[in-house]
Length: 139
Length: 139
DNA sequence: TATATTGTACTAAAAGTATAGTACAAGTAG
DNA sequence: CTACTTGTACTATACTTTTAGTACAATATA
Image 1 (tube, chains in turn yellow, purple, blue, brown):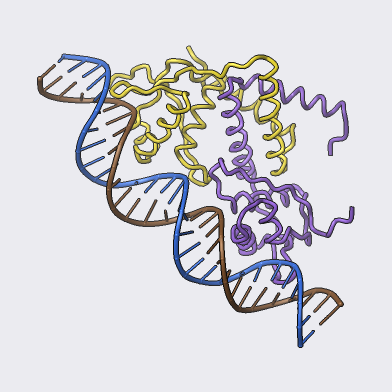
Image 2: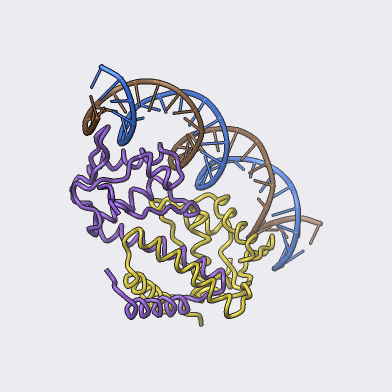
């Protein structure tokens, strides 16, 4: 049981949030990819170990991994483990801008319905970035 | 533009979030009270009208209103409507943070799946902010 | 009074989530 | 080969959420 190359990500579940556990796991993996804490080829915790860690059923972790496999975020091999696939959607500059604009608008209006301002959002994201740079720098 | 007396709050539901609709409604009302967009005596949309608006079952809206009634943040009168009671909403910073964290992380994940990095997102939002400040009136 | 509007109550059904427990399949390492 | 680790599949159960549909109760208004 040597500490292999498995990335030590700090997963955390919030039962009060109402968001299903398996979705929270997916979100946290995607987040880690988005901000560079996880990169292509890195291994995720095994189904069983993460289940023990989070004190949830292995089936629930398996469901999260399975969905990510389908989405192409990770690829899994029985007997070996689950690894970040490093897949990225290829878009040209124009389309990229359009996509970012679209999802951002949706997000801002949603945040607005909860009363958050653009300033608040930016501040929050900036803090998030700082935290990740401190805690999650790759060697 | 003769509005009725009913406060026009922009509710938005996210089916993909996993958070129950009735909880999303409650949260959005609470947030609106907390930051002053809703104040004592103002009327919420009727159960049926909000249900039509959000395209969900009236029972679901009713459940949200009923829970808020129990918590004392609204009072309801049959035949009249549902009104903000003016009770202080105990929305501590923790809860507020939880909400912002939830919707923001979902957004980052989605953006990440298109290959956008956290840096890119922050830059884009910052530019947006600049444009808004130049262009016009922020509340 | 009568009528419309408001919130409420109830049953039944469908869908999603998480659990326990068991078993199997595929790769790795000895 | 065997033994171990990995992901996967399956049944069954429990709970929550949401829906449809119907009906009722309380208030406002004419």
